[in-house]
Image 1 (cartoon, helix red, strand yellow):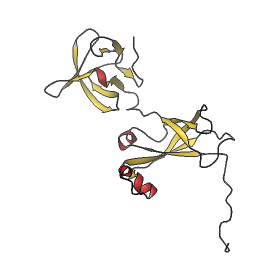
Image 2: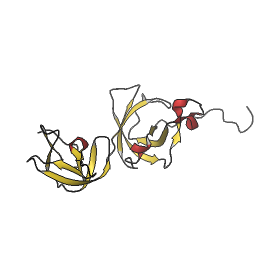
Image 3: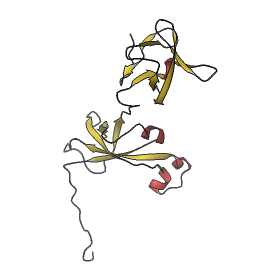
Image 4: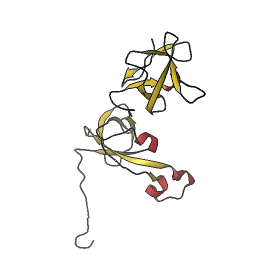
Length: 179
């Protein structure tokens, strides 16, 4: 070793961060301050709450991040940093974990299951209310399963899905539940 070389670094084991990589489509729905659950591989039954502290504004490919040339590595992803709320003694730097990061379309808005939305030939969208009446709706942002309702429904409106089962369609920031 030469003078000034780092010989040993003692890690701080009182706090941990986790870094995850998410698709660009999902990254638009994740914001700093969002809450996640982290399940360390070493303790798979234990959920540790965490908070998003940083989200990269630009996406990079796995090849760029890992320095590889794999064809599958062309997938673009955003880095998201999570700060864990606690540091159990079983955790060590470099551990892996499964992370549940719930994305929200928007806060304090009405959402409707996408399966309840129909599209007309003229590209307009509508839903069928529980009474059987068709109602035009204007949609905003969406996830794979739900969409934000900008116009056409109010909280408590009930929509039909597939014409048979009825679901609570317009909810205030929560998933619809079956009757």
